[in-house]
Length: 156
Image (cartoon, rainbow, N blue to C red; front, side):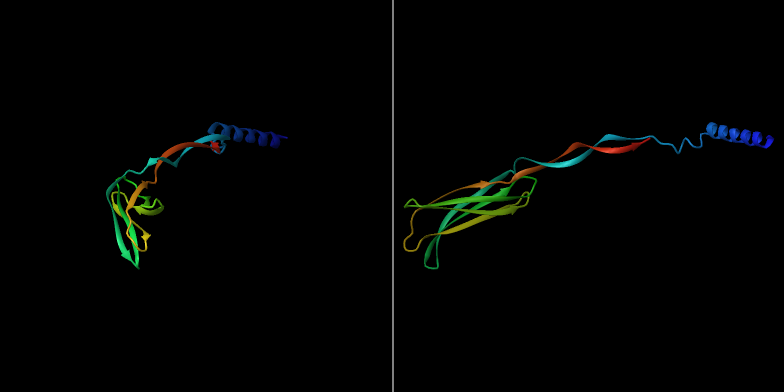
């Protein structure tokens, strides 16, 4: 019986020492599932890339026994982003018929490109050609940070 009392006494002293020194408190963590925020970059479109038409001209040529009508439009990308620009040209002949052509090219930021387009006008006589057209710039892509949320286990 004395041995049991001494054993219980030493066990109680050991438990008391562990509780006082906090040896086990560092190993115990409280964890819970929480809604945690984080930021992620997201692209969006805002307007179109800036450009200017630096020159345009129309011409006629003879090629393979046909009269060719042509147009050259020089486009400068004045934006800070590169992009695919489209030039649409409509050739209208004196008899009222018309043909529309599109040409797309990638223009690096700050650079210029020629958009040259040709069509057969007539095989025998040269007619008056009216050339009209437009530039279709690409969308401007911007990036912003968006706050999003996800469920995560957080321990402390």
